[in-house]
Amino acid sequence: MMMDNFDISPQSQPLKKIWAIGGGKGGVGKSLVSANVSICLALMGYKVVTVDLDLGGANLHTCLGIPIPSVTLSDLISKKISNVEDLLVPTPISNLKMISGAQDELGIANLKHMHKNEIIQSLHGLNADFVIFDLGAGTSFNTLDFFISADKGILVVLPEPTSIENTYRFIKSVFYRRLKMIEGILDIEPLIDEAMNAKLSSGQLSPSDLIRKITEMNPEVGHKIKADLAEFKPQLIMNQVRSQADIDIGYSIQSICRKYFGIDMSFPGYLDYDQSVWQSVRKRKPLLIEFPHSRLVNNFDRIVHRLLEQ
Ligand SMILES: Nc1ncnc2c1ncn2[C@@H]1O[C@H](COP(=O)(O)OP(=O)(O)O)[C@@H](O)[C@H]1O
Ligand SMILES: [Mg+2]
Image (cartoon, rainbow, N blue to C red; front, side, top):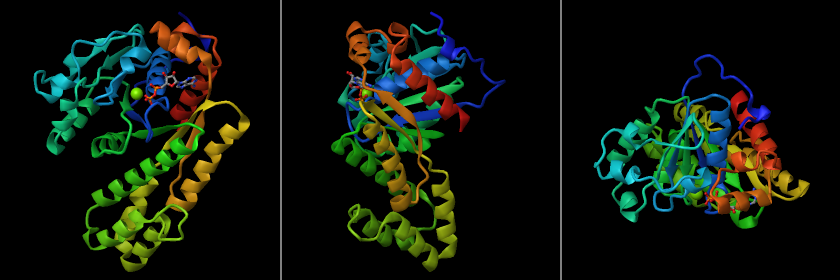
């Protein structure tokens, strides 16, 4: 099927990019976004691998319209399979392959620190132009580390208080996990913990206050932290939008992130609430292929182009 929106030839030899799709909550559309961003990139001519990292609740295959693959990340975690390339399964889109998520809880329980780093490295080593990570809900260290390892971290949020709160919680968790990974900050860890436990808008030490304070105490560490955070540019996608007010929430989140965290968040776009989503899920067909004229095709097209421009 030809979609003229996607009739764009890839630039010569793009660098491989890892994009992680996260967000604090289940059911916000992470798998929908992962599947369809992957499809957009594949239709543009890029070689794409999409990886279901929702270890325990894997369902990316459904959004791609394929049955549960017989090889999954569980086989890599249990070391039944040693080469990550052997996990690749074809999808209905020719440039797009997928790696299915672990189907059992055991997968997560066994994912120890060393092993997790091995898995992250082998996923980064995949032969593709783009590798898309579909993350699980919550802020477990596994999920945060997959997110942090990516070149681009994309957050899917719904215009609902619970989802917005979870998004802040997720950003805050990534923020502090990144801080704690910076070398030579041991003497300021108590300060970080104090700031981490502060509530949003409580008048207590905010993350940007924290960095100011650290820089006064120890300019060298302060500089390191600022350099690290300058690279942390999460991308926000507002999903299931029904009005302009819903879209505007995206801009509010962006400005709160700047004020409170000192983080430069981008807002590449929104996705309309659209009946075609559940219709395609029910038919077990990829949305962009089943409904090439839905509004969501334009939504995804705009988002992917903006993500590629950065
Ligand atoms: N833009 C949308 N319009 C309509 N329904 C949507 C939209 N985005 C998501 N949904 C619904 O929400 C459900 C959950 O989406 P999913 O991608 O599985 O979330 P997650 O991976 O974050 O748990 C989908 O099955 C779909 O029915
Ligand atoms: Mg999912």
